[in-house]
Image (cartoon, rainbow, N blue to C red):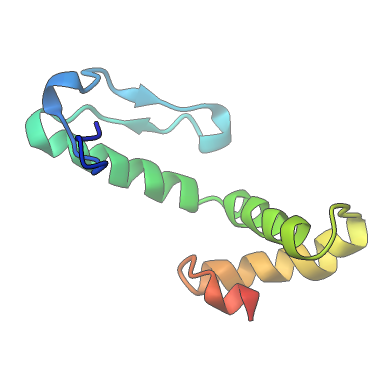
Length: 101
């Protein structure tokens, strides 16, 4: 939720009480329901799941490339630029500055 000042916060009364099951892309991973304020930790599990995929880094690097360089990405750009940038992003724990450098 978001309060009047624009700050977000976790409201356990509005939390989905079901476990969250994801697609085969995420190997059918399940994030188990956690009750009360512990439910906020489900977000951490989601973020770890998303950033555990190489494709997340590649997607992010494609977006950077399209914004700063050029809108079209061919096979050569994918192999010689996007994939190495994605590895840099992963190796730096998703810090963007090393990728931009």
